[in-house]
Length: 157
Image 1 (spheres, rainbow, N blue to C red):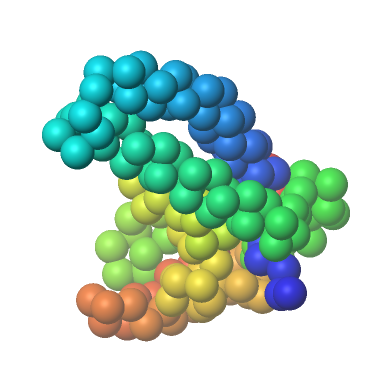
Image 2: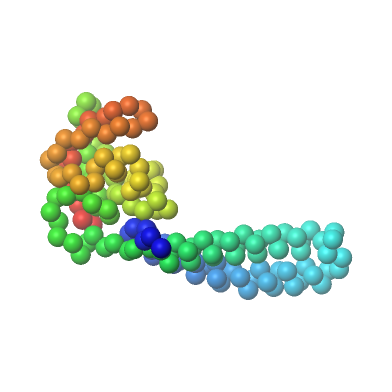
């Protein structure tokens, strides 16, 4: 089984969501039991809704447990800051054309959230940055075309 990289905060978020879902299980079972008492199951909307909710909850639990089982948690705060872009680092870029500053953290696929500044390790941007050093100029091929950036800072936080 191939391991999938994950940040410490990504693992913590998954474990928190798993705990929430595990606490929800008994409540859903109780809702099913109460709906079953209402009578005819064929026409019992509450029963069918509770069963559907149970199926969704169990699928989410299995998904999270699988993600955690294949996760390789990488804590960059324990690594020496060499100025090299690696998984988990936060990279500050300067757009060479516009002098606009952008800041991204390179995270696992399920943790990615562009609005929060977290990009997937498998994204074109991250693939173009990994292995580069602070001060390097890079050309990244994006869906919008080729963009040129200077790596201003690499933080291991």
